[in-house]
Image (cartoon, rainbow, N blue to C red; front, side, top):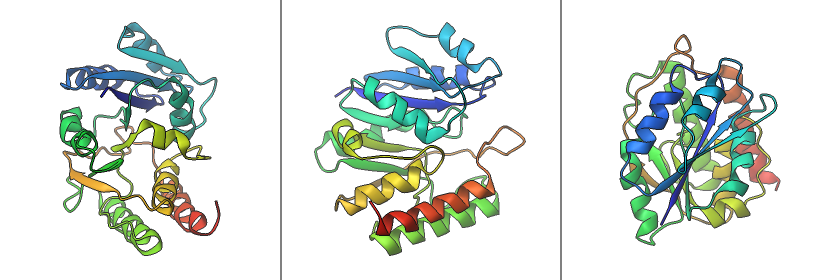
Length: 224
């Protein structure tokens, strides 16, 4: 099966070239879809310089958020599996093979890459949020997961396309978790490598994104 790697990116000129190089080095048959979400620092131009038969660049006219970028990419996907990749070097594409293995085996349709229990290098407020998000997902949806907010989420393409996603920003993670579990589908977890990045180094997520994420988990428990 071919893996379609979606990379939503906003103002990551310092890391986008290395991210693409690492994704390309992963020994998995893949296409790469970079969605530039209105960057103003030259990120799109750097990605465009690397475009080729394996890499497609899509551009949003203005910054809309991670969820909007992922939804923009889905119609362009040609692989049977979709994998979400951040562009900030926190996640290691060498983990692709174990992440997709359960789907290739036909065991599951959804895999999350878990950073738990160590959350290496992560500041304590982010650790607390991740524990709370996982606990809430387990309480509301019986998800039985340890890392709800992980970037590394892998799906069968037809499943992800079938979800009526409305997300614009970082609430992609809780919305997709809620919709998957409301369909009664199991979420399989695979341990991954992780190196946390600080806000000073360009990390985009803020405290209010955490509040929105938790509210999203609660909201979709009761509405469609």
